Length: 325
Image (cartoon, rainbow, N blue to C red; front, side, top):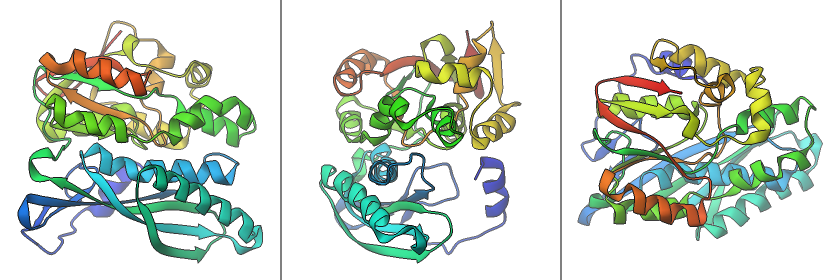
């Protein structure tokens, strides 16, 4: 669901006030945060979606990695997870078994157990996880703490949405998406572990609202302006011919429409790259606001595990987003 529709759905809702609920759904945060005793914070999130690839085991891994990402984006360590699945029984339980198997493999890589879950019969398959994590109060990372001068780092390339949509349309085979699948399956755990040692207090992950959509949320929450160097943003080469022709998911087009009055352009950014900046991602990388004195060292460490990592701009005083060619 796009940001505009989601805002309408939540309009006027007033949840019960609990002073220990430090972060709820009212803002733009990646997950909820609940205060426990002893300076520990409980971080909770839930995410699920329809298949983005044909292979059920790959789908399970991607969905699990995507669900875990919100916990990692807040600097937390996942503790447990629960499956959430919708599946048509007529497709056969062997396929559902493979989806669950992929999810368990990725959870095991994260060092956590899937403790149970809930499954319903549904005409369209859907899968994901509800994840619970833990973080010390002084290590919590939020998307509202970006500061003027912080360097914007991005750890994974864009273009995933365009490629998976091409797969669904039959324009590409799954073998053509091998690199994209590996990127979607990669956990953001390594990047998350580097945030606190390098003094990073703000980050978010790139998913359905696209790079610019999630960056705009950071700007709104932090009260800053982002300056993006379009030519520096990593985009999968196979996706550029698709984004140039706007052959992207409907969510990407909705992102562009939602942000059209929030983005300022200067120069002449490549139209294919500009479209990719709006592309809805699945299990994308982290956008990190890095203190300028630590950005170089952090980027060097990131590239060891996330070779697509790039410095793509900076934050400054003001509001909104400026995209430069």
